[in-house]
Length: 455
Image (cartoon, rainbow, N blue to C red; front, side, top):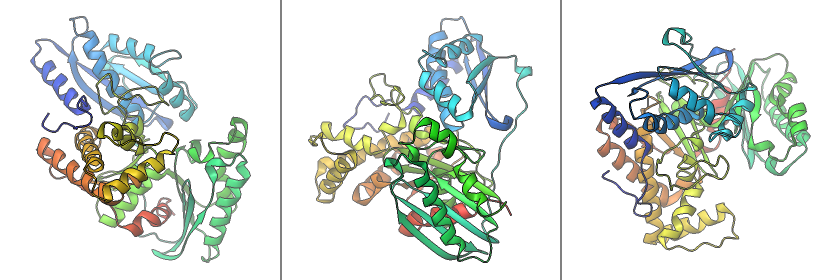
């Protein structure tokens, strides 16, 4: 490992441990192929193959230690509720124990069961009994033909655009407070008000596209921080189909609701006029989205905040999932706060995380080398982690967004990440890491959201 974070010397990149494991397996006289097939709604699935040591040859725990991390990555990158395992009964049985009530991956088990309204199940099958590949592709229209409304629901403001045949006739941002409001009528009326205003600039409404933080399946809201204060009963009754209900106010027009990370990547693809774009937003958490080689979305979760990036057992634990080494502690304001203490910067514990981040950023703008060191360390994290993400995504462009990459610190982080990725992984030297312009950071998502539905 050529680049070691000076403030986190125990950092053990997932990609390096995976390569080390694969090199060790390659030298073994006996090996086996393990195939994972992760299935989600409508039978869409994702396959992952890896060679491992043969079961019962003294490497069972080593196999499980690596494959458990990979399966965790698959669940949060792709999403799903049914995992088929072929090639290793031991791995299948251990994963069944892990993904259960009381298992080490209980959080993931319950979360995915809620998202897909199906209990997570793990099945050991013969290779010939695996389902046929069934890949989802969500296309969008670059030309933005027809009369469209694009809506982007953020935690502090909501943005809407009226687009007719590719021309933006109207865009507006409205401040709102969805995360601290318990009454779902507040959310409903706010969304409806913005869309009605956009509709007033159009001769008709042909389609509605929505970009919103959270997880969406069939345009239904499964998990979303915008409705944090809404109780479970009201969520089920009023929130789950909220975007569908709002769209009905405009007639039976096509509707597509997509995670804001995916729409960020779409906006980036439109700005760059290219595909294979991975967008990563570093703010309160780590959000992401991806546009593939065909210029389409894959219907994946892209919840990189929960994907393991550091295999060191003493790595910081995420207080929500209770797992260690996950992306949220490396690519959000949590990462800056985590590294402040070893950098010698004392932060008032009573301050909100966003305030702590601002203090470090201010010190950095003033030329404090301790603050700059923090962003250099996050750049090292990112360089190695992008190589792991490239294990699952075909990447040409990485777009970095969010408050963590604003200002001088973002430039430092960007520079270091490029250096690490391109020097340590020459096969990924074609990957461009960049930040979008200010205009596209603000209203670009609502315009890109308008392109989601097919007319």
